[in-house]
Amino acid sequence: MRKEQIPTLIRKPLRQAHYQSLQLLARTLSHLTPYETVVTLPKGSFIADGMSSTHDSSFMQDPDFLRAYARAVKAAGADWGIPWRTHIALWSADACKSASGDFVELGTGRGWMFSAILSSLNWEGMSKRLFLFDTFTDSRLDLISGHALNGKDKHPRYAVSFELTEANFADWQRVRLVRGRVPESLMSVDLVSISFLHIDLNNADSEVKSLRELWPKVNVGGLILLDDYAYHGYRSQYEAMNNLSVELGFKILSLPTGQGLIYKSAA
Image (cartoon, rainbow, N blue to C red):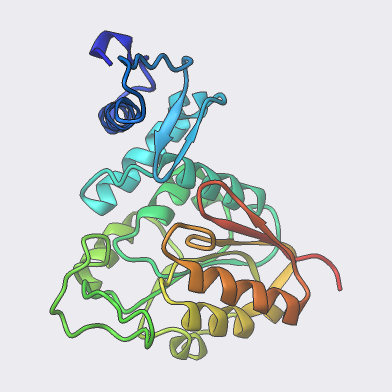
C-alpha cells in the first residue's frame, strides 16, 4: 500500500495512529496471498484499538469530540489510540447528565476517560458530584489477587501518583478522588445514588464485588459502562460479569470496542 492510497481518516491527533494501523493491515494481508495486494479502504474507515470498521466514523472530526479527546491526551500524557471507546463513554455520560445521581469511576488511572467526559459536558452547570476511585499508583496488578506488584513492573496507563491525578482534575468542581483498593474504599464515601458508573479495574474479582456493592445505588435508567468486558485477553472479566448478570438480573450489551454496556431497568 502506498501512502497516497491510504485515505485521510481524521485530523490530528488521531491521524498518525490510524495510518500506522493501516500499514500494519496492508503488511498482514500481503502475507495471505502470493499476489501483489492493494488495499483500498472506503473513506472514513476505522482501524484501531482491536477493531476495524468501514462504517462512518466521522464523529472523530466533530470539534466537540476533538476537544474532549485532546483533554484526555493531556491527562494521560500520550495518545492511547482509543477514540471509539472514548466516544461511547462520552455518549453514555451525556445520556445520564439529566438523570438524578452522581457519576462514579472505578479505576481512574491518570484520568483519561473522565477528563474527556468533563470537557464534553457543561459540568459547572450541573449539580452532580464525581467520585474517582483508584490506588493511584503505577504498579501493574496481579490479575488473580488484584494487588499491586510492589512497583516492580510499571503500567504506562496507571496513575503516576495521587497528587498528579488530583492536579489534573483541579479544573473542575465537585470532583473527589478516593485513594485505596476497591471495593474496600467504596465504604469510605457517602454514595447514595448513581446515574453513571464506569468500571475499569482490570481485575474480574474486584469488578464483580464492586458492582454487586453498588448495584442497589444505581438509579433506574442509569448506565454502567464496563471498559474491558469483551476485550481480547480479558476473558475472566467477561465470564465473571456474565455470571453476575444472571445473579442480579441484568443484560450486558457487548460492544465491538470490547466494552460492555448495562442499562438499569425497573425491577
